[in-house]
Image (tube, rainbow, N blue to C red; front, side, top):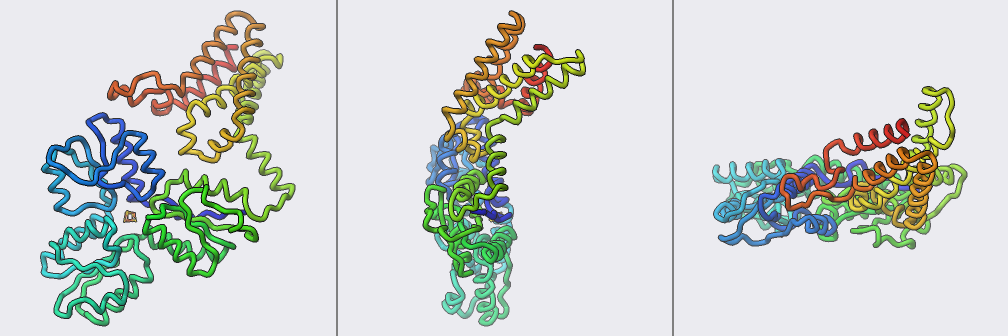
Amino acid sequence: MKVRLAKTAGFCMGVRRAMEITLSEVNKGDGKLFTYGPLIHNRQVLDLLRSKGVDVKEDIEAHDKGRIVVRAHGITPTERKAIQRSDFKIIDATCPRVAKVQGLIKQYDTKGYTPVIFGDAHHPEVIGLMGYSQGQGIVISSAEDVTTLPEEKRFVVVSQTTQDVDTYKEVCSAIKARFPEAVIFDTICDETYRRQKEVRSLAAQVDSMVIVGGHKSGNTMRLYQIARSTGKPAFHIETEGELKDSWFSSAGTVGVTAGASTPNWMIKKVIERLRTMGKRKQSFASLLTKGYQFLVKTSIPDAVGAFSLTYAGLILYRGSSPLIYPLLTMLYVYGMHVLNRFLDKEASRYNDPGVALFYAQHKVFLIGTALSGLGGGIIISLYLGLPQFLLFLALTILGLVYSIPIIPWRLGYLGRYAKIKDLPGSKTMAEALAWGTISSLL
Ligand code: SF4
């Protein structure tokens, strides 16, 4: 089945920024790291953070200490003061666009306006915004709620940043009709606006829509409702495991989008799974594409590249090339690439879930061929002589420790570079060094 991914799918700027701030704090080692409430509404991301030692703190107590990340949704001034009274160091990841809405409420509140917030009263962002209204704010969730607003007030109107654009327009019209003096701000985030607009246009071009994101994520649920309102079959899933073949039995093309708290690696997993579902046309072109994708994922093109490089180098240098040398380089590069994928499964899982899935599915074949390749390389290098054998062995050991932790995490700053691959730019340097050494010295 063909899959079309929305350009706006996945983390918004505020969530991406909060994740980056949190992950950059992980390795600093300045005391235990917490997030104040779940960083985002996504179970898989929370599991990932927990695996890195980041815990969720819901209540602040006086004796608490360590570091605490304020999430993109922001917090109330009262909560901020409670954190400041404790021994926590605040790492503020409040989204700048949310902070702007907080500032508007504070500014108009001091001028005597009553803030009206369009949104979900239980959402952390709205709870945070309410905190800036000195308890005077009113939360509404529909145009009908405007009839419940008290007559005598002067209102300033804002929206939760991820609310539905069309419903907010209806709310604003109803408020203007009843309170012509009301000051209204369009605080729905541009990213939300573009994401919702794209769902409508994408749904018109596909047979069905899949919306990826947490079942408790409000902005994901709104995307799902918008997709459904277009009349196309729409499905809200959290992981690829929830997809059902029966949903796509007659679908040729499916559109995919995702909420602002859905990481790319989860979207990629869903896309990989969808590609194997629905109506399948086994054209020659699709078979070619599959074959090409198989080759790319196996690192065979890298190995062939190494073979060609050595061959060309020897022709240029010596005028001829016995095939045994390029073969040795090819076996080394293939074995190292494949084994390092397995040794660093965690990175592939998040950076390239499609490749991680491929490696899990073809584990026996890939490990078998990689070990055979390296074994063959050892035999060939022995045949070439002792120096070649020792060099091949040294490079193989170096290649294997590339993805293995060699410095304990507890060594603070140094622990940030537990593996050679953690050094900035090490991948490019290590690959160039290994290719250069193996293809020239042997
Ligand atoms: S949706 Fe917009 S305002 Fe809300 S956190 Fe994301 S970037 Fe910030």
